[in-house]
Length: 175
Ligand SMILES: [Fe+2]
Ligand SMILES: [Fe+2]
Image (cartoon, rainbow, N blue to C red):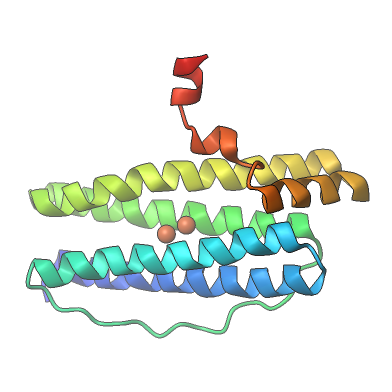
């Protein structure tokens, strides 16, 4: 297994671990009857599996070996919704750092198919960090105000909480 293939395989652990962690977060939030946040985290969990699948497809298509990682049992409870999202944000920053390392390695080895595959991940991580950071800031603004927390939960349930971020920079372009 060459160095880049090894590194991509190692990165798979980050995606599967994130999927598992988001699933645990979704369960905890559902237990607290925060259905909007819970549904959001379940979607994130599915997305992280799709990220792993995307890299696995790349490895298979480029005739490289795939070695599925061991996934550790995630944390099961958090002191608050804000604490949970702080963990999610830190986790996404860790994934971004890992993607950036892969990108540098692929560039160094002039592996164009790998940088092309990773371009998608670079854009995806920008959006994921923006989402997590937005929720953390909103939750800090809400503070101890339960009504504000429930409003954000409702916006997640209706799918409007992050629509401005999903529109991305085009939201500015259209304004
Ligand atoms: Fe991911
Ligand atoms: Fe992610």
